[in-house]
Image (cartoon, rainbow over all chains, first blue to last red; front, side, top):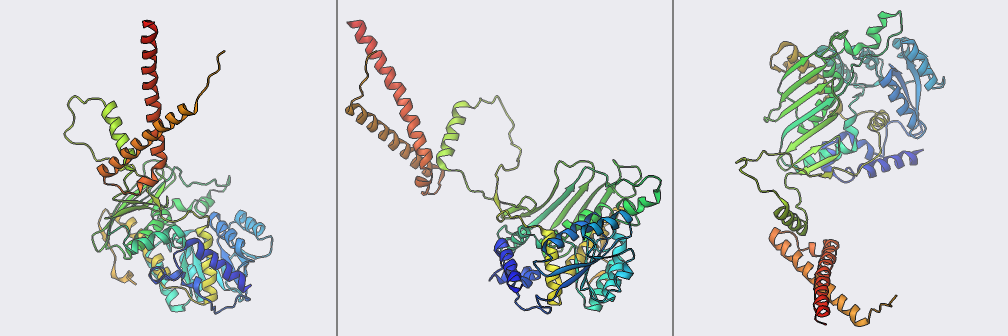
Length: 426
Length: 80
């Protein structure tokens, strides 16, 4: 079993190819140091037993990802908890009845032989379930964003510090080899000084899911993302992911944010915005522009990192130099000759030419790979449980991405520039 | 139908003409490298393009030579 663990680790390291022997990379990604570690607090022969609370769409994905490496990493899904009957039944099917099922998470937390809890409930329930799980002595993996309110977010972090239990948030890009390679290149200065960042997440859909007929009371259970007291909508569900990436790139956190939100397309039966835009300011003057909309999916999802020497588009795994290599000289000559022969003679013309985007395909940040970042982050969680601890950088990243997502919501609602209250600084 | 014989001498001539076209292509490549200040490695890396251009030049010289031959043949035939 130990050999399998090492093999998996070697395979992972080989595929991301940024870690071994690279102290600079480990310094900027200390959460990966675990993969170089030969010593574990819990041996490879001891099973890591997990309980899952919240097995809706995302919870099901997390559960299936853990099932993919259960036998390889000696992990067991020992308990599941879900209070919505269809999801409850589905979870039992997924686990073929092997995991002990619960409706009430407090009963699950009474199990003494669990090591970690995976929480994928609606946002407004993250805080009390996480706090109870940490208090019960369990390590916790909680989906992002951390919580619905700033106070709850702080409460979760404080409880993690007090109980000394692992708190890992569901920011899977932290474990994505493309992002890891990108950050390493950024730290080495390959794209120069980071002067600007942009991100967007455009979708076409209203998030609304079908509610069983005759049970309108289930609308808040099923469509919690659309209710203001249960979710901050696009701010917490989408922005928080890319907020984490922006903070990671800058290796710092914003000082203020201005934002706007509007409800202009899916205006019925919805309390949260369907279009948002934010502008964050970092201590060195860098700005991070963000927008997320629900009415058009043409541009999809992207994080664009603009440096003085190059640009990265992380979702596309592409890096573009500010001074792209010139095409072969002989082709340039042929091209110029063609233009000389075939170009039309302009009759007057503009005295200036608009600067259009450079047509240059760029290079790949790293080799294209087929590793699922969600699986990698869960794998890391089980390894941290064996280690008995996790890098503190992880909950800090999760904390500030949640806090600044909520502050953007505040800025949108108050139409004021918002800064961080010192009581929320960790 | 008449048999067409292509002598060794003819083939040798065509090869020499093509080699001249190749030399011209290489010279064009050198000129382009100097003009656009690119790397001299392109003498090797752009060989496929150079070869392609040499064949294009050979083809165009072939058209010109055929034209000259046709006019010559027409001129001498009419004289006869």
